[in-house]
Image (tube, one colour):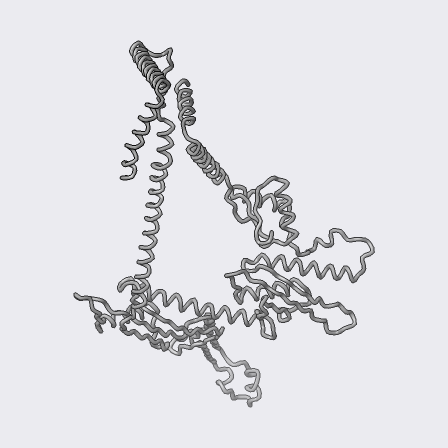
Length: 532
């Protein structure tokens, strides 16, 4: 503690010995240092604001700001108050709190319009509110799409009439504002169309029109939406098959030849026709017993006197077709029937939709750079034949199907590629130089700040102040020196007084002689002055 007090005392004495300008400079330097520390501390304490909500309606923005103010949560406003940012450490908590309170609500009116229905509301107002509610609910639903920023829907709800044979048809129109950098696919547009038609009774999909804020027609007209969706799906499937085949060719060849040495294009014909057929085939060499019938009959003994009933009974007596009456008779009969079935195979064949009917492939392969100096060398025919076989295996080549594959060797133009490489190298060098420059400038600043500001302050503050001791604190030697100096000064003062008294007495006794001496001194000095 004593050392600190001594330091303060020495600092105060040193500061008092400074001139007025140095005092002002020192105080300014101290104030600048304190201000820098204050700004740094405030900057460190400043929260990192992140986006809470953007593109809010005026009503939602006002309600959210009131909630944030009531909870004393710091926030920032931008985009004319439609964008709100809060501290990053409170972002998720604030969102959950606002969501629990139903914010943001949105400016669109939904079915909550019927929460408070006044008495005496007319039928016209009820129908109008119902239409507004449907439009608001559809708007909220469509806004959930990632690419949609704003939605506006107009509905024409058909009126039910018991006395009309044909039911009236409603209509709907949807205006979309797409977010910057986003797009809506055809499938998504058709999804919006079917959502609207399925949500409102009496509105078919073909009666829903979707446009963007620039007036471009996204869906509508007399074209069947189902066919449009199927066409889009078929096209996407075709592009996906071509992309997969192209990537497989490029990846396989680039692994062997190097990056950027292969260019491939694939065109695929797909059959999207759905066919089901039944086929029957017979094998005459293969016979199977289907059915078999055997009849066996036998008769033994004499013919009765009356004969055999039937025709034989009409024959004159004494004669018999099988023998003589009274004679022993024998009769045997056998009949066998066998039916054979030819082998038959019945097949029901269903052809898959999207089956490949033809593949066309074109591949260009770059040569190699070899030799000293480096020079372009084309591929040999043997290598090109090998690459052709590899490509055929990769795409599933079928000659009977009419597939075609063309592989050629070309020298690629690498001027632009080399220029890009040089630009990238230069950019990397510039970035490296900037980073090094930043480090060097920062280091120089730190060195200068330490040597020109910090160290002088430290030296000035730690400098030892020499203070002359008081008279009571002098030693014997110092006292003798002081007494001797006092005696010398006293003798010089007395001698000067004695000489001054002698001159005054001489001038008063002989003024003429004194005046002549003075004139002589002046004449002696005049030539010297003239010469000079």
